[in-house]
Image (cartoon, rainbow, N blue to C red; front, side, top):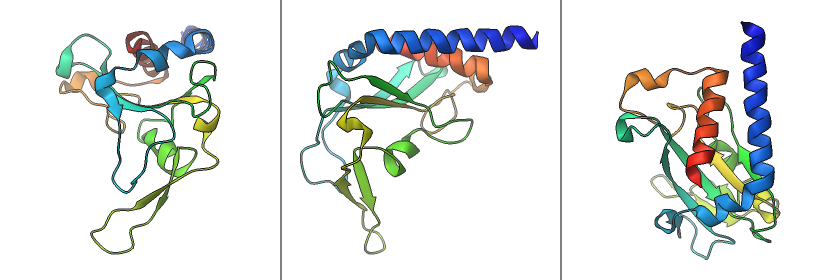
Length: 173
């Protein structure tokens, strides 16, 4: 049984890899205009590329189903030709948005100078978005901003997380 589970997880990961490498431009082009992010607190300039954020319901059950949060940063160079990176920080527990904020996102965050003020954002010269499109995905349900109003939807595990991620990729475009 364990070997079948490992094989299934490996197969799903391979399919995700193939899907991402051959159809990455679809994700950038298919991002809904209503999800366009045009400003963030602490940043008073134009973004270096287009940003999109929102929820994708992956099981057709609306708010009672699985709603995965994503933040898509399009490439600053050539979104149609540059690769797509799917960033999964790990779960259960840590939002993938952590990578956006502290690791390789398009901004560096400078701590607030006084209590009650906002951090200041500066463009990150080493951002991965210089050469790639990036989807930061909070997965599984219950991690970061991903949610369900139905507690039975919080069942997780490697195979379920891989399956949910696959469903997200299919629904996003």
